Length: 453
Image 1: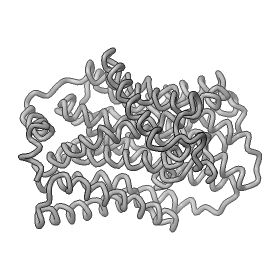
Image 2 (image 1 turned 30 degrees about the vertical axis):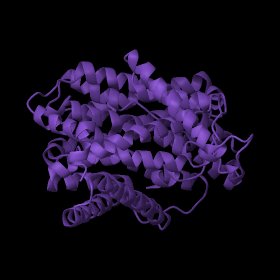
Image 3 (image 1 turned 90 degrees about the vertical axis):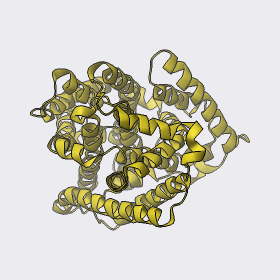
Image 4 (image 1 turned 60 degrees about the vertical axis):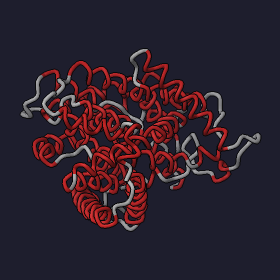
């Protein structure tokens, strides 16, 4: 969808697309910037974990400190391709998520996952639409656009943590991590479609509203179908030629990147296709066909994720513009908090009838709070659309400021809250520990030579 397209655009830290921003300044090289990011993020990860705080919060903070908003030590050329780097890192973790999605678990949580894909974002968007005029001075339409920007949960924060809980077998007896994974993945599709419709109407563009709405289920169905087909083709290819495990993992990543790029082209042609859901479906079909191969690939992707995680969260952190966030003021803070309460009510309603305990329902509510990826990708898009249409840009600046503030407030706090909730609210399923032991064996460096084939 347009989310993937937005991830692939070259943006300045404030959201523009100025090509001149690619030029390195003061002789700072991209390689040096990358080295600084890796070292500082690894140190931050270690330090935060020592205090029982999720390491990704340290990586977000490291990116923010090194980024343009604070020290401005990251080479502009690296920032200019930051969107592409974030997209590749997101593909890695979505592939790992696909290898955690078993058919039986999806069947058990399917109804609640579909509700989670729509209802929480709708509740949040309606709250923002209703309160935006009073708290921020926006019109109803401008508030609705802001509601769509804020309405998406962050896969960058949520997916890695759900994958970890799956591997630790926290809540897996009731399929809770899978429930959140599936719901959060579809949530982004629906929010981006609604956003594109509203922006098109607001700027006077020609928008086929009926086709856009119909495009939501069509994009999900087409994404699943293409992902399953590609996953089956890759499985047959691997079975036929039996390449080394590392090469299999690289082939899967390469095919997924091509899939996302194809999704961008289809989106430009107004063809509904959810590329990121297709990426997850690749892992799902390989898991169904050959579990040992899926675990092996997941282990290899886990090693790649060590580097991809640094890139993803540091680049998201570098996007945070604290001055823009401050411009939103107390009205922006109040709006975000009220919207989160509304979202939580919607999430709570989705868990009704799922057989979850009060503690497990609270975990799902907390897991649906963080903002980051979508807000970083499209937060500046309304401003650009208004400028291109020759309209006043003040509302777009307000939308950008609130989007940035939502990242600054909810990404670190939400990540910490999810980690705490996973440890304290989810029960560990000991019955399936054998699977976890087998995955751990694949991930052991001591077995690489024997298993890397």
